[in-house]
Image (cartoon, rainbow, N blue to C red; front, side, top):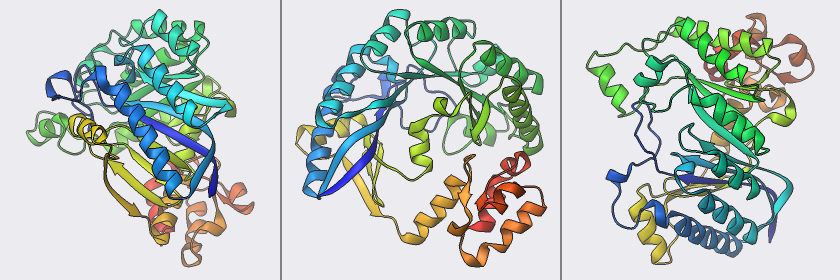
Length: 385
């Protein structure tokens, strides 16, 4: 048996009240679901997958000591009753113990929770809630197809705090038609809630999303890189004023204890289970992913079959590329000796260009400066084999 000490678990809840125009995640509204994929059945299906996953891993010679982080993502996990999320967490802990200090997060929308539901989640073992605020400007929310009233966000944050939950707010900047002043309004509104964690992601229009189709028809304009850089610098300035520090290019926390440990497990190449339709899992370089549609997912589980669509053993060179790509984005940086020898001269080049911190580099770690964060993809391209 191979003992794995730190395991994370991601539980994908693929349901949304409305499909947002920019979203390319594996999510479904009620109208898109067939038999067997309903919200009412979901928690039982997810628990069945947990049972099969543990049995398969044990058969492969793996045993888990404890789970250090759990993340309910989506979709909108809090469209399910709070009792269902707690049932899934209880079942998971019955299979593998949760660490005494386990971080257990659920994503939520401002209009998908109540004071009572947040209290139930906290009582059931959830420790953290990540709220999809996205913007405080009604016109921006409308462009993003978000349905909540921005004035509800401070109320929901306070309910979560009253329940004893850590709170993160998630923002998106770069929406077509959004001004720099709009971004400032949103960031200041988020910081006024006195949260200890803020995520601010640049809008990426990709895939066959409704927003991508709008772009192709000429109804909206593509994000301008210089405008996006100005908005990122504004986010960085305002979070620093509020004493939140970046720890990943798009994530800011008040203290190291307020960082998302679950996301850090991804960025540092940890092992995790992926439960739910379309969820990905990783164990010791083996990556697999589930079938996407909830109905097919449910049918496979009903027949006693793990709902895996495919799997791959990641090659050593690909794992190195991923490690450089992910670890360079975090404030702890990347150990210099991880960079292939033939690429190491580029470390000094990027230091001299102001993209890498010179003191950190002298100490053996590549850490992005603020200018480097704006050009992270270019720096990574120069360091990978």
